[in-house]
Length: 505
Image (cartoon, rainbow, N blue to C red; front, side, top):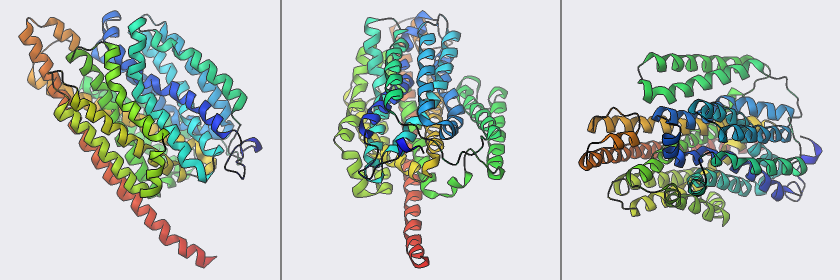
């Protein structure tokens, strides 16, 4: 770590809170792009003649590239400088946004989204790593809570911001709006953020970078294409097998190389594994839920993009309110990490169940959905800071970029998995109830012969939504209990090891 990034005795870098604001601006830009596209689905379906598979690729091309590059990006940030890579990431993200906004076909938009994923990977790894460097232990939980608040805000506020933009402009503006934000963030990063890097200067692990990128990309590709081609088809099984084999080779290589990109011994730490399990399954439920809910609000209940975004806003508002008032960090301090994760993920699961059972029908009621969004927002505000802090505190500070890469990789993996699996559950339930040949729900509704048939199609989609949300709720609840169990065991192991260390000293 360079001298300019070293925390002071008074709690961290003297400009740490201003720097945190800059970091959060960069983080917000990336995370908004994960969800802002969802409300543009009807516009893209109409103007670019996009099929359901095209839409899924527009959404997932970004996550696919990010997932494949996050570990490599984190390792590069640790070695070459986190400030430097943060600036490069903002520049690449801005250029990718320009290409996406001017795209004239589905193929061009998918390619531009993939390019944005490169910049996004650099930003996702460096923002959290810088937070870990400039705050000391006394303020780190609070700083991570604010970072997580912006993460949740970006994830949940995308539909609202997208709705406002689409109310007045064409769909390309949801990408072009990123450019001034990226420019402001780039200037602020270059002026304010201190440089930091791993002082050991390990040699780059090029083979590890290659294996991790190929393995993660193949695995996520299989997950994304599963609903389209069928989980037992060659188009899915081949990349899945490649992903498993290459990731296994990556693990073996990392165990043997003297300069590993990812120290596999981290996975012996139950605190690390527990937080990782929780992070994957929270994003599994949230990613799939947001993907489906925005379509339900517009296609089934008939809301305009802005109206749909406003109805999704309580999720983001709940997260912001609880964390900006310090409720999230105080709960972590009072209850401890294991119990906090249990409470938070139980609330997320309850929110998903509420949407499924009382908010997912076609009668136009919003109360059940509102209750579910508030419960999910509360759960995120409570659990996300605890899990992020657990992951990062289990990794040495000089490996903060890799730790952020692991955190981001698994979040993106969970998000892509949620979209694919819950989307597959929805499609299977939908196909079991009605028979249509159209490639998307709007096309199926348009091809319906009469109002009764359109009502059957809408009811079938709503039933598929309910089933998929319940699957997500079960997964999140199971993940919360598993994560809490592993975190509790890790705490007990640390407590039992402490007296032995004192005696040895």
